[in-house]
Image 1: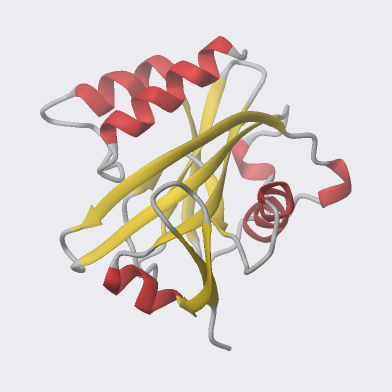
Image 2: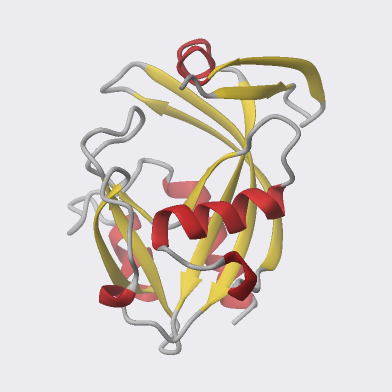
Length: 182
């Protein structure tokens, strides 16, 4: 079934039209996403290795769980839906802490796609170990917790230990926001 995304301008104002997801990434249209940063009791961040089937940034580590908003969907609804779809969490159990909206202008140079997002950032605290999540294998290859200090060092390294989506400055900004809210 084709996936449509609502299109926004650079200021996050709806342009009142929808496009196919692939077309949005090919043409570099602004759209909305929700990103949930899952933190355990040791203040480690749950990261996921993206599936090789992903159209944008396959086989790279992502620091968040998230996805695209459907047309007219709220950021909060999308965040809860993505936690349920990607990690198997029941939405009734989800308590999200909103950290704000950031605009991300990313380019997947390998696949020649542009990913321009107005992303709502949420924090979700859990005591679950990585192995306890029922992750979606079509989206995620592996889940692993990393300390925030390791992630920061990895993002700043000329030779990173784990390959991460190339949004270094945005991830560093988000890590700072997370640390202020722990």
